[in-house]
Amino acid sequence: MIRQTLALLATSTPLKSWFVSRSRNDEHIVLHVSHEADDCLAPGQVYPSSATPCGTVVETGRPLVTRSTGRWATPPGEGLLHECGATIYAGTPIIWTPSDGHSVCFGTLAGIGRHANEHDLAPHLPLINHAASVIGFALQAAHDADVLRRRAERAESESTVDDLTRLYNRRGWQSIAYAEAGRIQRYGSSAGLIMIDLDELKRTNDAYGHRAGDALLRHAAQVIRASFRDSDVIARLGGDEFAVLLMESDGPATRWTAARVQESLSIAGIEASVGWSSLDGSRDVDAALHDADAAMYAAKCARRQLHLDASADRPPCG
Image 1 (cartoon, helix red, strand yellow):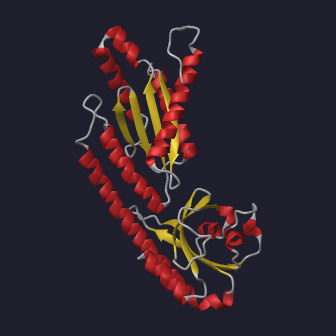
Image 2 (spheres, rainbow, N blue to C red; image 1 turned 30 degrees about the horizontal axis):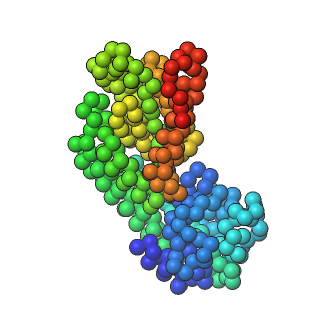
Image 3 (cartoon, rainbow, N blue to C red; image 1 turned 90 degrees about the horizontal axis):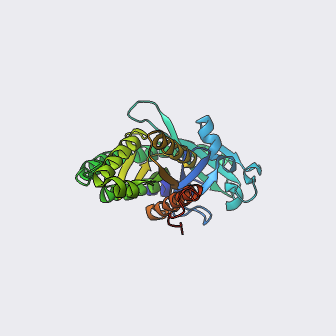
């Protein structure tokens, strides 16, 4: 439905390049473009709000038709109109009304062109506004269906839990993470990945036996679970390694949460190394997981270096 609506606008208005963008923090992520759009527009592109009139549309919550004044080309090379060589912009907000009844601005429906002017577009504004309503309805309906699918996925994954900690196991966690990555691509959202490695499990097992090691794992799982929201997905991937998928979390929020869970574990008397990364439309789960794992391993090496004088027989890192 979204593609058909964009195609209708491209054939029915003076503007041939139409796109749907998602507003997130101070950025706009291009989600859909019309087939007739210029090569400068592609799904997945990210523009600062200051580099596109879409920021003004979201800020005011009102439609906007305007000609380029050059201000969107700052900083150089990041301006949407500047990059596309366009001189005219028409945009209108896409509004969602979630189940709580409070309307929110999801993003914008916008078109750009070179040869039209404000007067040419005026007769088409009712069609543009109606198209935004249709696209908003389609996006929200798809999102609501995804929410139901997410619940079903979690219910199905209940059969793939770790017997010891009652967290998801690797299979259950990966199933949910890969499904969530698809939603991130569709809606321009983001998530965070946190990797946690318990530093003392092997020595606990060696010194006190596996029963003590199991008790450490259960205690760590309780502390980790208490550090996250119900919507986040927590798993014991195996051995002493845990992973967390933070829903709707950007980089700064994920970094803050990673520091908080490490502090909570430390307060509980559990030594752990923590790493994090972001999952967005520019990378897949495997790449994000690799980066989080590398950050966690670097943290483990740094911690070992701090204790090097106290325990010279520890194995080196890398």
